[in-house]
Length: 351
Image (cartoon, rainbow, N blue to C red; front, side, top):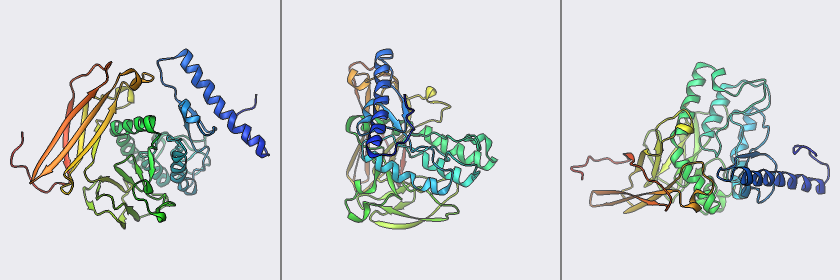
């Protein structure tokens, strides 16, 4: 049997190569259904064809060079593949091939990785992929990226549910938000889910970066709470410890405490970040949750959907929490911390 990475010289053989990867994923998927019917498969492969995603296939961009050039193509590749149905397309964080030890490249790749479908450093043996082998400063910056990724587990899990239900990519081009012909080729800024606007840093020594802000909303800096009006390109300052990251005004962002592993994740202790929008009378978001392990949890009714509503009128802000329970979900008491951003007045009373 030929290994899946063999390339052939003719068009006909290339088609066989693609079908081979597709069938390989199918065989693993069917084996899981037979041997582990209650578990979800994680099939990491770089070969496949249209429709391979139905088998739980997780594709990545291959053994990309550990260079700035290797990084620069990654957002566009992921966005294109997401629109073709492969919502989990990702890259080896830090790059894979080559003996290039560049701490700034490594840092920027991991910061981008927080907002790509799979967070997975990986590399050839010349340069280790783990942060512990880097400088003290780089380790600290990597730690911040890794911790943010864990904090976003509730938000990201809902993106996975949306992909499961509708095929919606986790990474979305900005023309999903604003239907303008000039934006069709724009991959420098993209949406992470509906409510994050992300601009990766893809070159060395960048101190300012042009960011496109869709006109459909105003956008709040995730780190500083600075407000930017939508409908413009704007030069923003770039910091060492983050890439330009903005949240849609009116959004709810669900987060959790930092954990050492997803095994330690507690979905009953959550933070709800609401980005206040005084211009919009009402906003709503829903977030899906299940045990993270059982196959077909939604179809089995073993899930909950958390609902958050905000309404504002005459300086009266009302936020409501609700939940929809699947018929086979065992609910538990939740501890929810509400954090309100983008508000410039103090409440006179609460109830």
